Length: 84
Image (tube, rainbow, N blue to C red):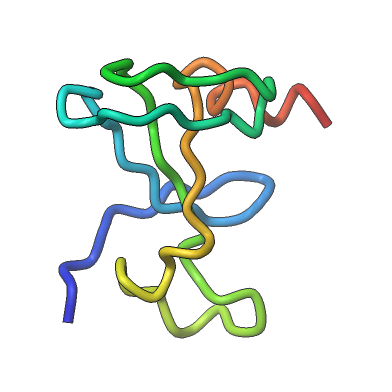
């Protein structure tokens, strides 16, 4: 089983948030916060729900949450509660 990740509690749910340096990235990602590209080698965060939506008891493991991961600009992630 994958190691448990730290969970960030927020008004929109509990999230696993992993900061990335961008050093190992050779592809672009589209930020869901601003809908702009995150160019390769750009520091950003990747996040996914910490728990399955139908259960607050069983945490996701890193592999099973792959379809839910999203790459965000760090500033967009921090400001996401102000965009709703």
